[in-house]
Amino acid sequence: METPLTPMEFARRARRLYAGREAVVDGDLRLTYAQLFDRCDRWSTALQSFGVAQGDRVAYIAPNTHAQLESFYAVPQIGAVVVPINYRLIPDDFAYIINHSGARVVCVHSDYLDAVDGIRDQLPEVSHFVALEGAKEGWLDYEAMLADSSPAFTPAEIAETDLISINYTSGTTARPKGVMITHRNATMNILNTLAHQHLGPEDRYLWTLPMFHANGWTFVWIVTARGMAHICLRKVEPRTIFQLIHEERVTMLCAAPTVMIAIASAPADLRATAPRGVRLFTAGAPPAAATIERIEGELGWDITHVYGLTETSPLITICEPLPEHANLPLSARAVIKARQGVEMLFSGEMRVVDPEGDEVPADGLTLGELTVRGNVVMKGYYNDPESTARAIRNGWFYTGDAGVVHPDGYIEIRDRFKDVIISGGENISSVEVEGVLLRHPDIQEAAVVGMPHERWGEAPHAFVVLKPGATANEAEIKQFVRDHLAHFKTPQWVSFVDDLPKTATGKIQKYVLRGGSGITKQ
Ligand code: AMP
Image 1 (cartoon, helix red, strand yellow):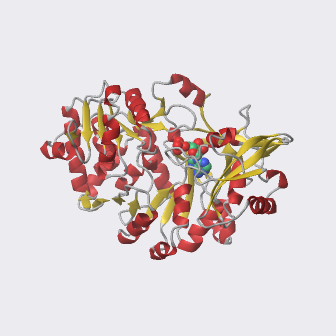
Image 2 (image 1 turned 60 degrees about the horizontal axis):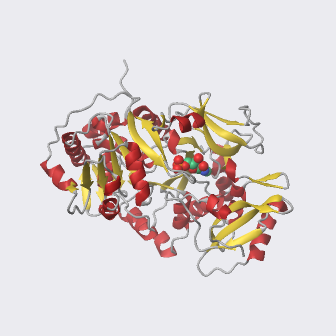
Image 3 (image 1 turned 30 degrees about the vertical axis):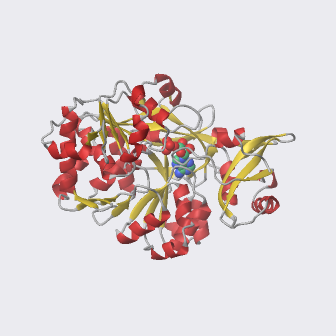
């Protein structure tokens, strides 16, 4: 017997088993699973009354609210496709994505109603504009429509290869691409995480990671599947994070390294209230061993490093802890944890390959491109067969990430290919130099890019953000790197900046640093 692999199966089970348990905390609002699903069902009916049919796209622009969470059930259970848009983009990007996805219903949080009103004339195909909160003239009121709706929607026959979401990736160079995730992709990724991480109804999950980003690394469904509580967080702010962890007895969260840095460097009085033993999944960019060491050492939290891309639903590797790691000193363990690790149980096969497609030796030195094939790889880029064909070749998905394989089989990402600095014929990993810079007590954030150099062809240029009140100068920073790394890896230039240019999802835009764009060398 075969039934389709779909996260909606986990929802069906949760309805039955966890109806009375707390499902959502969003500010003053608390919902049980029965209440959450009742709201989802009513919204499904409303969407069907708008004419949303199987395969149609429904776009959302919202921070981590209960309404955004509801979209991940109300939309797919009628066979439609959720398009959660990164709310940090500019209105022009909203218009591009909404039009590219072909969504005719757009659901928007109150903070973005004005932005969308400003682009209405660019959205001729949109028939329904829904305000999730704070409805005003020209907007349908989500809560009023839910109250008027019946929960008796018409369920869809879902095939596992149907789309559940289209997630637009915030590329660093071009227009975003729509990653098509199927019900099967999402299910395999959920199982992936659950196979490696024990979670259950005793757990409470804090929404530090945006739900729009690769469906919150599928935690929009994982938390429900395990009967946990979703603790919504509308704005990533250290004080609120620590307050919710304390008051809502949070046991797990996911965070990109930049959020980890904010947590690690929060004021001491905040950190003092934090319970020990909180589990934190990190991915999105390479975390520095120094940050891992600080959070594990000072807060007593347990960090798991995972890696993936929107295109792989997203998680594909995990830095799996081994019993022998447990006896290592904290700093040595943090160095291991900073590796991306090994393929996950359900992510399929991973290979690190040279340009000919042959696997690189497991010597911890030879750089290759990470490739993967398996059930988590996207169906393709929406309406973009050319980009799809570039990314998936000969049955393998090419990640564009450059890494090495250590003798123990653990993969470590050293860079994106375009970020490798080749200086005097030697490869330098900017990530490695950044890792050292972040160990400097005065440095808050750092990014290293290759810049043209008369003698060496290219040389590293470090852009650093100092901690408030810190005074380290260029010579001290260069000396610090020289003390820790081969001399040729020492930045030739150090620029002190107030902020690093980042994409809306927090990735450092190295191409901006390379291009100078107003940042002058010291
Ligand atoms: P996105 O699709 O926006 O999630 O971005 C995926 C990209 O983020 C990957 O191709 C990597 O370059 C980077 N990335 C994600 N996780 C990690 C990680 N654990 N370590 C290093 N880079 C990562």
